[in-house]
Length: 400
Ligand code: NAD
Image 1 (cartoon, helix red, strand yellow):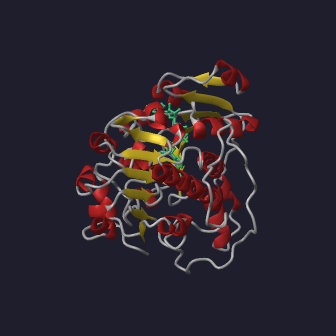
Image 2 (cartoon, rainbow, N blue to C red):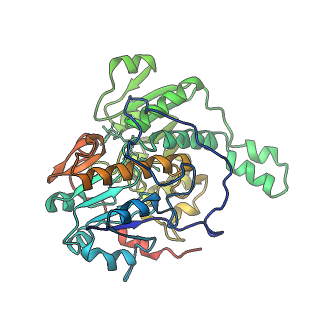
Image 3 (cartoon, rainbow, N blue to C red):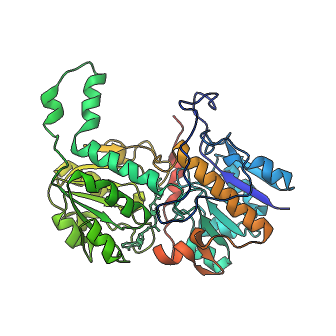
C-alpha cells in the first residue's frame, strides 16, 4: 500500500467555509480542442466546494484510504523540519499545486527513495526538478487544460485593470474620495492597441480569442507555429522572437511554461526593447521575469504597469519588491484555482491516481516526464533541466 503526501494551501483564516456564494457550477463537457474534461471513475466531493485547501484534501481521502493507502495532507512545505520533509522518506507519491508548490528539488528527491510519481494538481510542473525526476525514473504528471481558460479570463481582467487604471480608482472609492482626475490621469482605452502573447498554447490562444472582439491588433510568438487557418481567423501577426514582438506591442502577456529556455527571458536587457509605457501581464511563472528588473522598469516608466499572480518563490516573502513596486496589479497565485478550476483539477488528480493504481496508462496530455524523458505536454512545451534553484527562499514567508 502506498503513502501519498499531499501539500495544499491553508484554509481561509475565517475557517473552512460552511456556505458558498453560489449553488452550482456550469456544466462543461469538453475543452475547446475537443479533449474531455477529467474522467475519474467516481468523485467524492461536491463541485464548487473548496478542495484546494488543507481541509478540502482534493476530495481524495475516502478513495485513497478506502483502498488501503495512507494520505498525509499538510500545508507545511518549506524550511527545516517541514511536515513534507519529515514525511518524504517513505512517500510513493507527492501531490501539490503551483499555487502553494512543494518544491521537489534534487535534494528532496534524493531523500525519497520510494518516490514514483509527482503530481501537479493544476498546470505547470516547474516546481519539480524535472532533470532529477528524469534521472530517477519518476513520473511527473499534471492536469493539462484544467485551468487554462480560468487563467485566460484572469489575463483579460488584468489587461483591462492596468490599461483602464482600475485598482487605483477603486482605492479612491475606498478612501472616501471622488478624485476623477487622479483616477484617469493614467487611464486609457484598450481598443486599437497592439497586444502580443509570448506562447500561444492552451492559455495563450484562449487569450487571443477573448481579445479579438476588443478591436486590438493581435501578435504571438511560440516555438510551435499555429495553423494558418487560426492565424487568418484571428488576423494574427506571428513573430519569431521576443524582440520583434515587444518592439510593436502596447501590451505583452506571458503564457509559456518556466523551463531553462524561458527562465528570466524578461530582464533588464530585453525590457529595453519594449515600447516605453508598455503593460506586462504575467500569469505564467514569476521566474520568467527578473524580479528587480521589473521593479526598476516600473520606477523608470519603461513599463506603465505590471500585473500577474505568479511569483518566485511562492509564497513570496513580505519584502518581495513586487508587493510594493509602483503601478502593479499583483494578486497571490489564484488565477488557476477558482472554485470552478478546483473541481476540474481535483477530478483530474483522481483520474491520474486511478490510472496509476489500476495500472492503466495516464493520458498522454497529462504527462510531463515519464520513463526518464520528457513526455506528452512535457515534450511539447518544456526543455530538459531544472528551474527550482532559489526555491529555499520560500521558507522566509511568515503567515499573516
Ligand atoms: P500549453 O502547454 O498548452 O502551452 C505552452 C506553450 O508554450 C506551448 O505552445 C509551447 O510551444 C510554448 N513554449 C514553450 N517554450 C517556449 C519558448 N521558449 N518560447 C515560446 N513558446 C514556448 O500550456 P498552457 O495550458 O497554455 O499553460 C502555460 C503555462 O501557464 C503553464 O506551463 C504554467 O506555467 C502557466 N499556468 C499558470 C496558471 C496560474 O494559475 N497562474 C495556471 C495554469 C498554467
